[in-house]
Length: 93
Image (cartoon, rainbow, N blue to C red):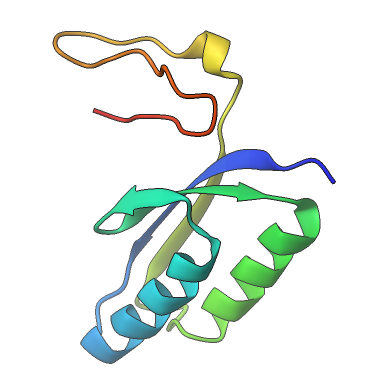
């Protein structure tokens, strides 16, 4: 089953909801920092993640984004940022 790389980010305004969303993301993420995570997901895993987060957030107050990233060949860096060297991860920095 093929997995695609997604960048998942959120802005949750309530601490209790924030903890719940963070716990859900930790189950799917391969890396991340604060409110942005890298997730390799199948289509069904992406749908499950979105559904579980939807149950945790307030749709009128909170934000949640799932962005599919393109091939690593398209990565550009500036300054001291490093080009990804590991096949399993993408580095943002």
